[in-house]
Amino acid sequence: MKVKFKCHYLEYFRVINRKNEINTGFTLIELLVVIIIIGILSAIAMPSFLGQTTKARQSEAKTNVGAMNRAQQTYYFENQTFVEDAESTNAIEKLGIGIENSVNYLYSATAVTNIQRGVANKAQANNAELKGYAGGVFTDSELTQAILCEANEKGIDLVASPDNANDCGTGSSKIR
Image (cartoon, rainbow, N blue to C red; front, side, top):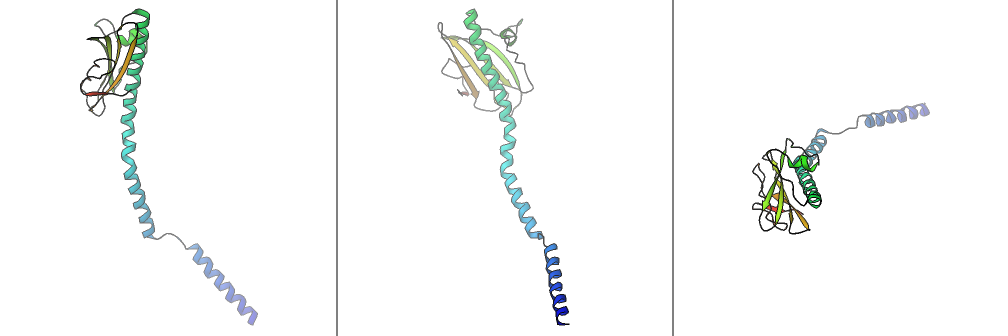
């Protein structure tokens, strides 16, 4: 009887231990703490994620104005003149670079007449959350120089044309 009692006694504790292992879980407080921590971390990270779409849209304009600058330099080397928008022709079409006006930006090219001969390539923002961009290509003989400027403020106002290959227009700053 003694052996039988020991067997039942050990089996009883084994069953109780199994029940304790099966019923272990998280308490409500532990779950709330985890949810609060995840909420705080997402609140910290969310603004940086939301700003990425604006940066991507602005990157489109920077890339396109840079491409317009390079195309103007190439066109100048071949034809000894710059291409600008006119009533009958579109400078971008004449340059053959395949840039189209988009939902975010309108692109244009205008002549700059000051000490140096040149052309201003612009990306005007269509959205108040975006910055405008202006590029310029200038020449004073056989050498051409380019500049790319970013508006200091967001908005749909037209960015001022660069004054020369070293200075951006009023309200903008050089980005490369």
